[in-house]
Length: 113
Length: 114
Image (cartoon, rainbow over all chains, first blue to last red; front, side, top):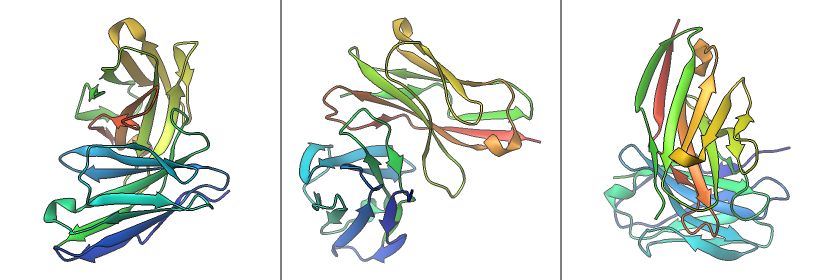
């Protein structure tokens, strides 16, 4: 059974640009969540999607957005990148929304210069 | 908002020593608790989870945990650690509604010395 796949693994972007990250959940999982991991703030919840609907959203500015497709694949978009957006972005999939164990991908390392 | 506080940021142990890592969570209602591990260069992996029932739970790789409701605490234990247990360990909570998704602690960096 394939795990959670995130692409790309590494990205370097310039301030002011936008970026799109992709996540393919484990087959059959309908819940996808996104987290930001930084040395200073640790792991912080961005948002969760279930059956193409955003179910929950963390405390991040509107520059951070996401969506989920009918095949449960999810994308996360960050517009007008800032230096502080440099982080490891993790995607997690679950079989049911919330509460159940989440399976994490390897993450996308985003560097904003 | 929920919060999770891990008792130690860094722990150094010798091989064969016993391990205990603790965390406290803030939510007063029904809560699901998890311990995740992140080995160097690898993704977060679930070690074990507590949802309800027996407060002693067993996980993978010989890890076990104890949920102490009266102390809002969740302890991760392993009787005898190995060098390969060197990793970052994260405690996480999830409450009903999940408005905050999984709430993670800051992590405990565990180093096992041969």
